[in-house]
Image 1 (cartoon, one colour):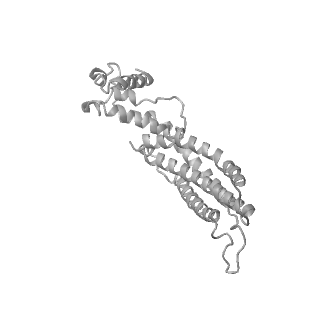
Image 2 (cartoon, one colour):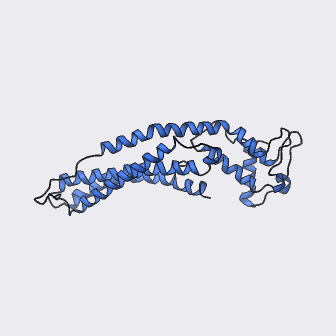
Image 3 (tube, helix red, strand yellow):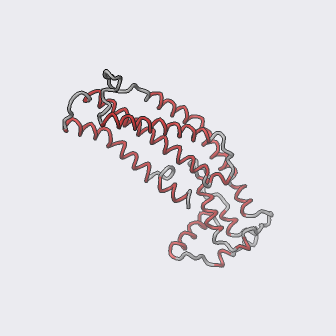
Amino acid sequence: MATKSLRSLYYQRSGNNPTIPSGLLSYVHPATGNTILHFAAEKTVKDEGFVLQMQYELLWFEEIRRTVPKDLLHCRNNSQQTAEELFTEKHEDMVKSGKQQLTDLGKTCPGLVAAVVFASSFSIPGDKDANQDPIFLHRTAFKVFSHAYMIGLSSATASLVLFLSFLSSSYKEKDFRRSLPTKYFLANMSFLITLVALVVAFSCNFYLQIYGGKRTKRQDIIPFVCELTFFPTVCLLVVLYRSPITGLRSFLRNVWR
């Protein structure tokens, strides 16, 4: 029984009827002694894909384990292996591949985060008045600038810590279920927030340098806002809702279910 055919059969039957035939759940292969849980322990893909492929393998195995009769959960096949032991053996390479990819991220992304923060370390817009206060202190754009810049710095710090945590993780099989996906999602999201916040801060700085000393007309503001928000907003929506790796729906559906 191929793993892909087992998976398609399972979701085909559970889509119309949440129960699976008891004969299939209690099936033991006469030649190998494998149960349906042993078949589910096989890899569903031959080549390792993205970094969290192991999470989907664990989810699939857990889905079948919940439906198998309890007396077959620790059943051994003719090779004296339980389904859990077979799962660990078959996914050893996938665990190593995920570990390699995440440690590579931990080595390269902190430098990228540091470069973004360093490049954004520009001066406060405008000069100071007689009281040594910024001349744009009470302008709305200056308030947005100050808050966005601080959010960018704090998010960059969080992203830096999360990416560095990949270098010290244990990378056990169970870590790919919740721990590593959570770190991966938060690291990517904090880095995305960093970029958005620093773009807003830079735009406010640019706006104050040009229009800070005079009253702004609507025809000047509309193109400026559109140029600032249109493409980043589209990209943000795609990342949040369409990405199978870092998407919000994927995170809520797979990590915390």
